[in-house]
Length: 582
Image 1: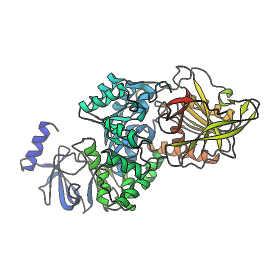
Image 2 (image 1 turned 90 degrees about the vertical axis):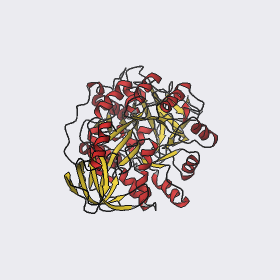
Image 3 (image 1 turned 135 degrees about the vertical axis):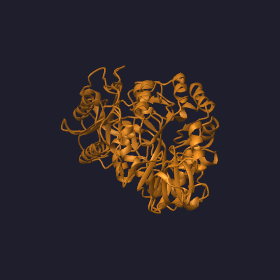
Image 4 (image 1 turned 45 degrees about the vertical axis):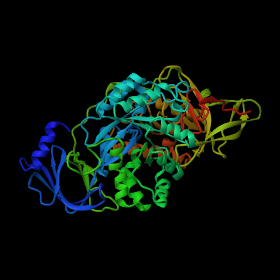
């Protein structure tokens, strides 16, 4: 807050200036004491100026009608690229649900386009009816030497971004950068601390002394908890836990049920979405869904609300957010009920931005920069042979990436496949299918092929240009011709999700911005996503979010296996391994 704003607030409190807005007669949920207090809310210069019944008249008046007044919700960790939307288009999906602040780690864009990509992203995050704070991408590329990316962020670039006023934290740092320690990445952690900002964690699968080493190097949180014992172990070490509920990573029920059973304090808990598709946001809601689901599981409403507001504000040192109190930003929502919360009106900076589930008209957003387009550039044209796995003999034993429903982690399994004409065949009966990854930055033309279990396809192929974190092209299918056709369709569209059968495109959702995001409104993107999901189901897949599941199979940092353009990565061993076991 600047000096002029402070002076305006004090003058208004002392009666020397009128309020800009007075919201009359609300039941304010005080998160400091847990009380619900009947009051008016006086707003000046976009901030809460006073809380008291029967405040003097303001320039504008709003009837609170006895609704509950809650602070605006905060998503403690999100990859906005996973919403497939530009920041402006995302507003219509999340703001009417009461989300007024997003902590965004754009490391997907950074892996595609480096520092310029992050700058372009920040240019699109201006003038919005909600707040975006930057979690500076810390690992670009995520796995040097194990993948090809379009961009890289070293220590100088990270230092530049951390110094920005909108930078709230250093983004998630995976265990491979700490155990054993990487001097470059630990220097990034120290730089964040020097600037008074936290360093975020990504401690998937860590436990025991390895987790303690992770905490000892100064990482502050983890959003990868899958079980309650993992959550409890992290809290005992002083790490905050960001309880995640995304499209394919459904962790909230198990974690909150454990918290309720264990009757543990919730001070170190926040909510986040991490990766959530727009169709799921529109159907379920955003952070409000987490709040209400936690309440259904037995968490007291005020505790659930605190996890969505005051806790993340404190954790990320966002002193102006997280509560309705004098001097803080006037970001709040009004709900007729406390359980479940139903945002009827949403205010950001003292301005009404959403009502009755709809975003109010906003200024036209700036167009996406041209540098965000035309990022899919294959060095060579793919062929059918790219999707045939060479093998000798009558059968071979191979490593298989096995999906775990509703989780980001996977299992390393094996399968025995028949060999015909010098190639290992898919086993549709046992759901073992080829998965390919092709470099898409025009750097080396590398490609890799492995096998996956869990998609359930009986025919055709699905493919996408979203493949964490390298974001090369990834494709799963039953037939090499369909896999080739799917990749060719992605190149023509300059990114997206596609479903192919019989060599023909059945459904396509274009994502022309960095190959990650659409340049269309949320309703169109959501409809397009539902169409490709339905087309995948028509091919036999039973996954609720097949393209989100597909996008995580490229991660070389989340156990147990990941596929990049360089090959199949054993995540724990941190090396490329042979698909063949015999």
